Amino acid sequence: MEPAEALATLMSPEGRVDPYPAYERLRAHGPIVQANPGVFAVTGYAEADELLRDARVRVLDEHLRDDLLPNWRNSPAVSSIARSMLRTNPPDHSRMRRLAAGAFTPRRIGAMREVVAAQTDELIDAMATAGRSGAPVDFMAEFAYPLPVAVICELLGVPAADRPLFRRWTADLTGVLEPEITPAELAVADAGAAELRDYFAELVAARRRRPADDLTTALVQAHDTGDRLSGEELLANLVILLVAGFETTTNLLGNGLAVLLAHPRAADVLRQHPQHAPAYVDELLRFDSPVQLTTRASGETVRLDGVEVPAGSWILLLLGAANRDPRRYPRPERFDPWRAQLNPLSFGAGPHYCLGAGLARLEAQVAFPALLRRLPGLASAGQPRRRIRLTLRGYDHLPVTVGEPLPATDGGAPAGTATGSP
Image (cartoon, rainbow, N blue to C red; front, side, top):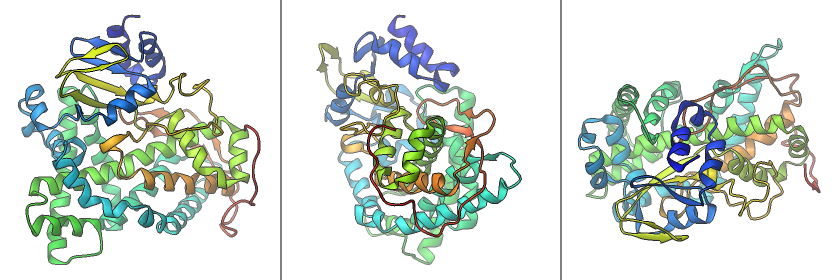
């Protein structure tokens, strides 16, 4: 299959639901390949890692976007993303990122472990109650969404009563992150973005009247005390912090649980030895990444692996493919939490490495051992439903039965060290 045909397959609904066959068809042409005029696809781990760190390769900021989408400023969805740190280059990116970084230091994240553990136990209790009769429970609705949204909303200072609003708004908005979007999909994304911006405009006004110890107040004060953050940047970054703060983690939890339920021996090792959770979470991130791709543009000509990428080219960095590069990970289709040198690219690399990566890892490292220990009868139930998305890969619906729960009394499984492969 030619690269253009493989890329077209990847962008089809079937390819978005299961991109891995299309990745391998592209990989057959090399780790970096020209798929269409001016469009290059990257499937190699080393190549993706290098390009993510290369200062000559830039995100599609508003100046580059003017050439591709002249009317993008009229789209609430595109403009919300474009004016955030996600879609800006230095020095603006560095300035905006620095303002939010204080909420995501290792010390601050570590201090949230007990809060995450308490919320995890509450949600497990609720799942056990809902599934007591043996009826299937939707893991996405009952656990994978509410856990990370509660955590990021706590950081932002969003009232608990408002959190259910965000699932539909953000699901609609994130359609704009796809490499291709139809006018109808853009209209849906714009509606979601408008709702989110209106909500945060009201929250900003509330924090001006009554400051609080939260990230929204910190960003409002950064805006109000000088020129460090414009009004548009303030709203755009609040939107992107909320969206990125739970969408990725929600998908990590859903994708990860599906993998663990399909690998009961590996799940049992984690159940008995929760200290291995960091390695398990990194392998889950590698095996079925919640973020499958990111895009860049070459600011000048770049030559890599004998392939010349001219200035102005569009680069599709296929993170899900890079995480299954057999040159980096032998037998990449095999789930193996005992791999050496994991370092998946699921959260990117370089200046745009995900600000909340440590928080997402913490939530998953707490959640998976607790779910497996407290719900030893947890099992798949019925047919799961994937979202028809490529950039953010996850489930709409993941039905499970929970079985008879164990109490949250001893704080984890017995200590010990597992040996060998699950």
